[in-house]
Image (tube, rainbow, N blue to C red; front, side, top):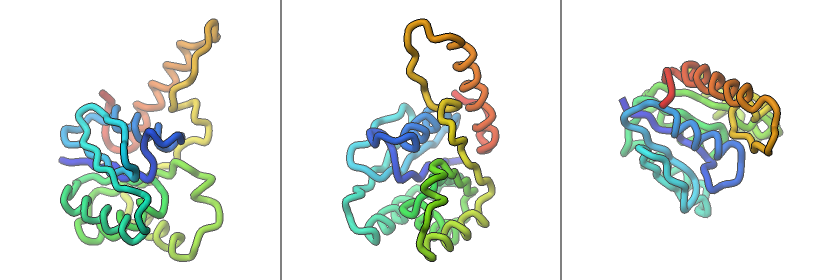
Length: 179
């Protein structure tokens, strides 16, 4: 079974969403993993094929390129990061191929701020079609790497907390234990 992560942000983009997506790709235990990422020079991830889409193009071209890539890959599982540039192609593709859809709301502030009517409808329909909908915690210290300073207290506890969070999160996504 193939799995594709569709994301508007991926490193070297300097955002928590990008970092979360890269860590997710590293931790997923699947044989056929690909990432469709908007950007020109995405960082690599072992055992993962990354398909970059130049985000400097028109919105129509972005959606078309994404749909074309999805159609070529035909993933059985599609993990979608929230955002109009990933939600619209995922919704269209879900009507054509019917993959197992997993929708991840990783940027809650962005998903809650005022959106257009069209984006609201796309999100509503994609959420209804998704088998799993996950909202990441706003406290990123539970899942993103922390900067450890010398003599930081309780480092082992924090590392263990993150490890446990990722194990539970992967199960929630339907992908069992991590690598």
